[in-house]
Length: 308
Image (cartoon, rainbow, N blue to C red):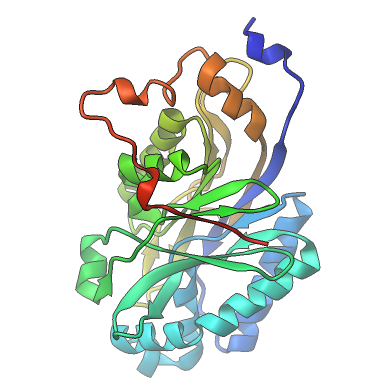
């Protein structure tokens, strides 16, 4: 038996990841009620960290009729305009349910007129952190979404959290920079049209957990929304992943949902045990990173700040 298994100190957090169905709300009040119900159901799982997916915010465009939701540029403008109120609603619910929430990402318009894809992390005491998506997919370039910066690590009451929005999870150096800067949890909100896309992000999430001895959490959009030129088809399953290690998880899967079902997927992870595995595990991927030819320290460009 591993020496690690005899150590008793723990830092366990409960996490829930949404398989969030893109619907067609007819008003902002209807959309807000849907979010209230989803957060309440997520909190009932016992989770203290709720994760919503990439581009879940685009659903709000449906509230303004076909003249808005049928036009991609007007969709981006309107959803970006709603960002402050969208975050405020989630902050209210975070306080009410005593949870941290990763808000479903959406476009935000910068001062120079560029759109970036931003996910906000809100805490029960009202603090808000923002992470911009770094690397754009081909379809985002076609939309006119720009890559953002910088990478950030958020120090929270639950632990140190980093965010890799969908495609960003497929790039090992981004994750490594976050982990070298202290991240213990990597959140991966995703939005993929096809099952193949879902599996790319899932593969990235599993690999980043293995390489860095951290927990990764994928939350996807699901369901069809033919009214939207942006999020018309959505496929995926939520998952909570760790390295496959004895006494932690034989498969690396803490929890995983049913493909394309609308549901919460929840599980508990001991962050202290994962950290100990970096030097006591069967394999020591985190510690052996620098053994790779060309490996470098990567944390220098990451902003680290206290949230809440």
